[in-house]
Length: 487
Image 1 (cartoon, rainbow, N blue to C red):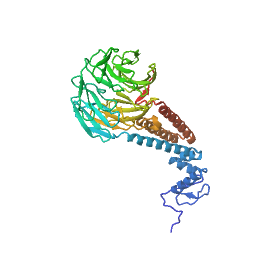
Image 2: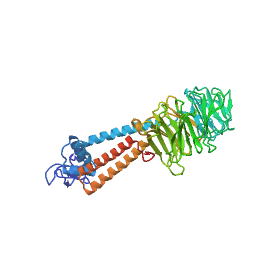
Image 3: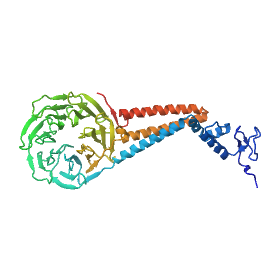
Image 4: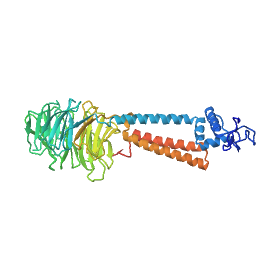
């Protein structure tokens, strides 16, 4: 029987002490006299040395370098390997957890299907129990917010406005809508009955209930007169006519205390004025193009407005300002592939939601302007209109040009600052970083560069790249979508 130390003639033997290759039939190294080993035994011995963190022989160093293990050994010996492994595990866990958390908000909680044409607006009732939606099928449909069941249909409705052409009364008992005959219809929100019609001298496009439910602010964006009328709900009488704009009025909204109205226009101005015509008018002319969508903060101290460029390839900008002096707090500039189609402030004052064309809903931290959630549609060119918050600030209802209305639940990600888009961006940078480190290792091995030097270069790159990512997250800056914009 052959000895256990003998191997087939095709297998080389190596000295673990001096590294010399020898004939497979020899047992001891003719150079130094130490026992010879085959390759599996040598690697097994090297692994034992790694675990013991002792010095490797030249032969073991040679074959560990060939297998890419010497760098791991050096890192372990210097205490850096464990740190790197722990950091990679923590980053992978956090990014994976946040990615899964973001995915939870990507599936609509409820789909409200029934419209046969594009849906142009959807609004949550103040009591949170129902949703009203209107579209180009000339109907307003009222839904149960929890189950998505259609309660009834009110026919005859149609408007060219993309949003704010219908609204709930503050007590949730009535709905006001703009009909195709350019009149305002006020009807019972429980069954569509007890309808009253208010006819005005202007052609209504937008309406907004006063917080006490006694008045309606109505604008006309079919003419360039820039007229807004204040109408008494009970009598239908016009109480006041505002003529501060010089072009089409884009949107109007009452302040939470009912003492002021904000209006935006194609003339680029944002105006804040007294609905009784007694006070002064605040004027802001800093929008680069049309001043379109706007929303008040619940405390009435801030206004978010959209500056929509008149040129097709310029970027839309969402600005948040103090009402007292219209000072800019922060602004976000939308990438040229997107155009803002609405803005809404959450009732708790903590978040701002915007809709963008095509297929995007994004939520920001209202205090900092950092994006914290993004919802992406099916990427088929659908147009989302102004989202509306539920009264408890946990959900959004969104109308879409694909004939549907849906409810989503925004989830804050990355400690309330980074969105799913940020996580995808970080993943792309991470993949590029790993490829770069791999290239450095291969280059260093071929050029016989010191492994410790390669490890030092890799560590510097990791630290610099990590610092850039942290700065991106803390500042809320994402070069692939939104970026801060100073006035």
